[in-house]
Image (tube, rainbow, N blue to C red; front, side):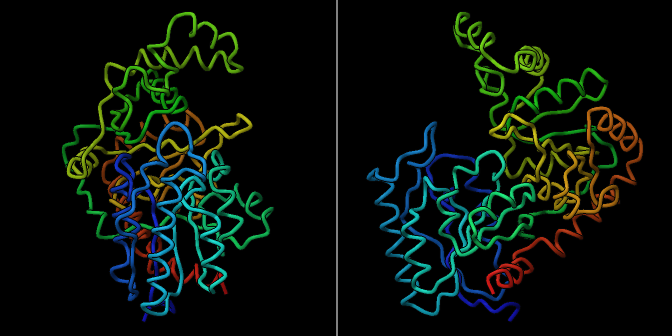
Length: 375
């Protein structure tokens, strides 16, 4: 036995929706990540959480919401009847899982651990579950005051990854790309990527949403002119909106679409440096850097990874030894130029990062921490 838990029920609604590109990611690293943990796991079956994905969060009174939660309720009770269920671990939001369901399961003596990874920009999406969960697990140290204010147990620790889903990337001797980026478009990312291009550090960009001309990251390029002018006049960050247009004009001819699971390792192997951009705009309008899933996933493949600095990434990996970080555009430019001329050093950084992640940031280790936080 590697931990005190023998039987866990896992719930990740993303894995039970007809649309959304996060389904495969959570299935690989959440549902399939327990193979070497000496613990039996069950996951929901015949559930459809598609109702929770769209432009607006559905109210908790909708028929689809109630049906999914009733079925999940029955499956949880059945799991309890089949043996000694030790805990429920979920990655869920208020629009997916009923708070009353969480409360009932915990009243029956089963701890419910909920993981969430957007607590800075979207804390409102999980606040009700956070009030009911036995333990709230999240990676952003800046969000600690929010969870502490709920007077509920919490654990601030990084994501975990499934080693089986992290094939090692053998960086080619002859590299096709100095720098590559994989991720969805946001205004902040478009701005930084376009400025790096102007400064002589072009980045090959891949990901969902970049090839859509009306991408929300660029303010709706197909909107009527009158609407664009009205937005510009009313927008509190007018200069940022203007630059967003300029950035899109620079990037729209070179951005490419998403990578399949087969294509991703090949793309990473062709890049000497993989760039991470992890800041987000908080509800107050400030840009704040925090750890994203890719901040561990890319180093986990053995990439030389350069990302925006924050306290969380520095607790997960050692700066300049296992990961490269930057605080501003000029530092990013400087590190790209320095490390792109030193392929051996890049490979060494990637190898050390992979070893650290496989040693520390897996379910086998994090389960011990979850149990200790619940004790």
